[in-house]
Length: 257
Image (cartoon, rainbow, N blue to C red):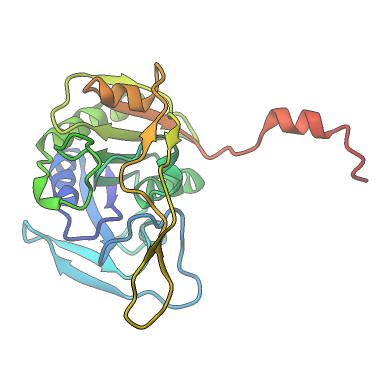
């Protein structure tokens, strides 16, 4: 099996390397990742310039490819033949910090796996919480131990090989620092605590901070947030069908012609 491994934290990420080790028993693992952090890049692509690619040495002495593009660009590189045959599986991660609920629409980690839906390639996005009270401190990379996430990723890929992933679907996986069990869950709803904060600037420019660091969530049964709160790994099957069938029915009565 040909496996593409990518992320949005950059090719030097310890989480990426842990994933590589977990995936190697299943086939040939090819690493194409951004050359630096691209967190929050969502499904952005690079269309107005050429992309730089450099072969780099990974932590185990093997070769990977670093690009100044986005996570989605990395998937396109693999699909178009940069590392030989197209992938049979896309794995994105292991990400520093959770990608839960509404956060998946911002996530470059999840976006890379989503690209597989368009290309007909199964995808897994995997993220791990920080070993802090909130589990969302994604900036303190030194706090992370990805052993548990790597072990769960290997177990999950075994199941994917045995059962497959439904067409048009990816698996969004979130792993607590010390997991106790796993649950198949649905996406929950975030409560963002963003506010407008004016910051001082020595040159008199107006600078604002608008994103809060510690969002909350609606605590509902069956969601990824509830699974994480209970200390379990959350596995959420998600897809890209954004059409509102209910709205189509309601709008058929509109005088649009």
